[in-house]
Image (cartoon, rainbow, N blue to C red; front, side, top):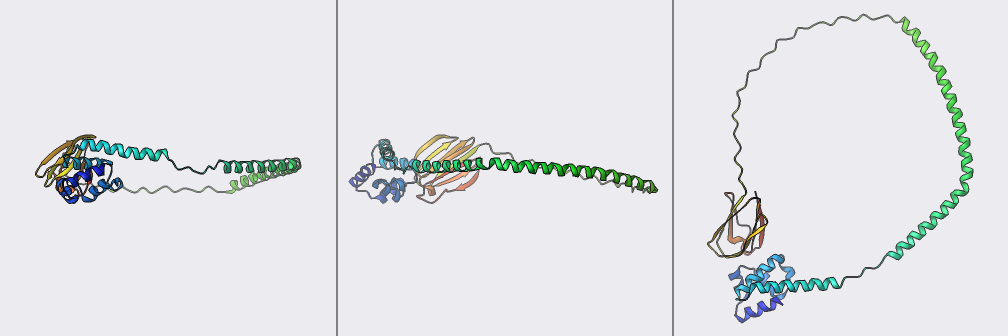
Length: 272
């Protein structure tokens, strides 16, 4: 296991976990988790690879080879989990039983309806004949009543006298007052937009750093105290730092400050 290799080499060099933290800026809780193989306590696989690589290089081991062994180790655990899946209780027999019961009850209902169909048809025929007779009587009554109403309305219209309509009084419109012309206000042009993302970082302590500009990784490694780096992207700049309190950031001329406290692992994406 990777953790055993690193722990034995550390003890061989008579170093404590605190000594490793001071030199690599990797927190003691993460160093202890790596040595015990408790990878679930790490922030993620990307962080784990970076920690193992820096830890191994610090102990004068091959960091790249340790990362490859780590990937093979976690892949073997994943394959073992896939080969032993948890069996679920089948439910097909229960579903089949329910479907059969529903089909049997449907057949019983259909046979009962067929026996009463002939009697119901006779009842519906008698009701339809009675409805047609009532409808014809109503039409004849409404037609005769409408003729009498038309005659009475015509007689009443001949007796109404026309009403004279008075001419509307014309009112003179008031003269329109011309509003004074307001002077045009000067238009202040908006400030020119900043093209892209200009990111600067000044480091006051050692810090493992990874930088991705517009989707492409441009830097990954340990930055020592006193260095300043500049990165420029058209769309965004993604930064991952293993010792957040050691770096002060400035984006497009505006101070952002530190992304976290000393020893914190923080990832942030700066966009325009």
